[in-house]
Amino acid sequence: MEPMSRTERAALCNTALEAGEYAPTLCGRWTVKDLVIHLLVRERDPLGAPGILVPGLESLTDRSARRLAGQDFSSLVERVRSGPPKWSPMVLPPLDRAVNTLEYFVHHEDIRRAGADWEPRELTEREQKAIWKAITVAGKGLVRPAGVPVEIRWPREERERSAVLHKGDDPAVVSGPPAELTLFLFGRAQHGELEFSGPAHHVRELRRGELGL
Image (cartoon, rainbow, N blue to C red; front, side, top):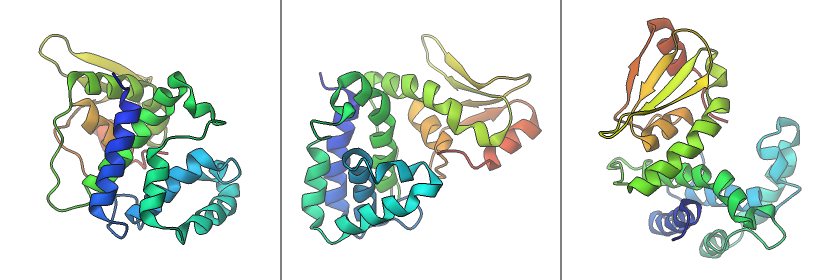
């Protein structure tokens, strides 16, 4: 059975082609083509990729993106679909799962939810567990800008799961399905089915904090 990092990659590519290169996304002014280019630079350009996270290197990322901007959209999508190049550490299954599960899930939703008629997907138990496992690790960095203690909870009939993302007394608690928790923690406004509890001032700081990378 393929890991979610791969199934979401394929699903994102299908949705991108269906939406079209000029369709909007939840990534600011990025079109679908801009998002696809971002994914290619991230995993195929060792010179341009660091600027995605390091502000001082943004010019290298922009230059790489401009080189791809004039290429055929469908060809770019198929390059994403084919996966990372053989020389990339991301071809290793453990690393692929660690760095691409949320990357492709969130960006897939960035395309899906940019439309007015989006609805949450029905995810399998296996997919929800994969997202939960990933966000309990990645979420620790995502909530740092809020500056308050944070705990997330996944209510389930058999056993509720919880994870502390930022330690401290009287945390802001966010409860909901792993997919919606993830989109909230990545700073996306289009999410649902979440409940907030804990001290009002902590919840307020969390909800208005600039969460995400």
